[in-house]
Image (cartoon, rainbow, N blue to C red; front, side, top):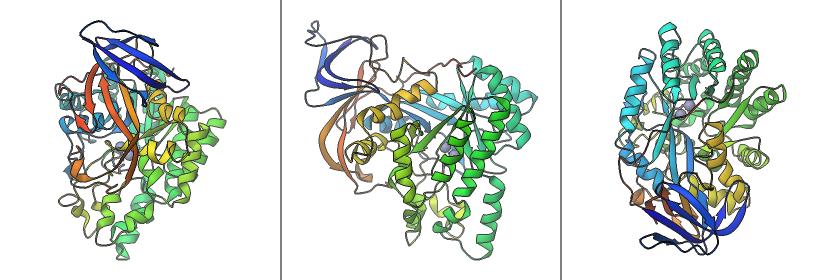
Length: 460
Ligand code: URP
Ligand code: ZN
Ligand code: ZN
């Protein structure tokens, strides 16, 4: 099986040129102008289009038992949605409950993806408790090809760990060369403020952001940075949403702390007024950390442009508006947290980032693909257009004009947080390891073809 992508403009994190890309089997083997393919080669004409390396979402939830319910997507629906939107690799959070066994959970999460996913995948291993058994199991999980952990400094009693567990997790990560990704919010402040708001009769979705203001996140980041500085572990802050938290991460970097920073497409494009919509509609926009005051958006865009923020994810966590969000109808603390956006991350980032002049094409590719691959030990297999790399490619049409709608989405959730939003450009042809998997908004790939990506720790 061979594939030729002809006449496209190749854009990588650091280069821009016109050439053809020839792929044999699953791999890119040649890049040059005027390539003539052997008979039987599938040819894709990319004239007038960009060709990007396949995009990687570094933070998704597909299988997620959470807040008394289960997130809506499976790897069957989630991987199709990802591919249609130009994302060819998923890094999912494996999130055991505190009572669960780490190794059994890892196997469970893996079994949800293997044989179902149409795109490649790997996991951040959630450390939701730390004891002697868990430690041995984490060592085994790293031997099986996982090079990142996930911890929560939030969700008291569910996923959250205490400071002793945090310290021990970071020490183990340092020893193993594993990077520790972290949800940073001070859980005591969150639970105290939630209780105060509810006691005052403030129960609607718009109270969610009042319960966890920017300082709650900044404290979480500062807390993690202190522990990282003392242990020397490499860290990565997931879903950073505001200036106050970014300031803490940058201050720590200046002290020598190793810290990557991820923001989300939702924080770049939505603000807290969405969660204040009347008639419970705000529940569609409840996630943690919450959507912020709009002043933060330019801080985040500028942070991406200047390299202070390294990656862009979705934290995809889909819960239906009709049947699941109403669990919190009379109590905002019970609204399942999450704003689905796996399918739209790349098209939104292009439209509201590149096309609006907020970031350039190289920053776009870097933050949504290459930097992710480097941070999580996937580069240069992923995140690169070069001979030897996996033939994960996105032929992107900047002349496309359309609108986002729940009616056309592949995500298995009953609303779109971006309903009616304009798109200026979209992924037109998407390949996974040399096979066309999506074309002009339609899935054309093979369910079950997605591979588990073995990773080796590098953060010693
Ligand atoms: O609101 C969110 N972020 N939901 C998913 C769970 C998490 O915190 O990542
Ligand atoms: Zn989180
Ligand atoms: Zn998450």
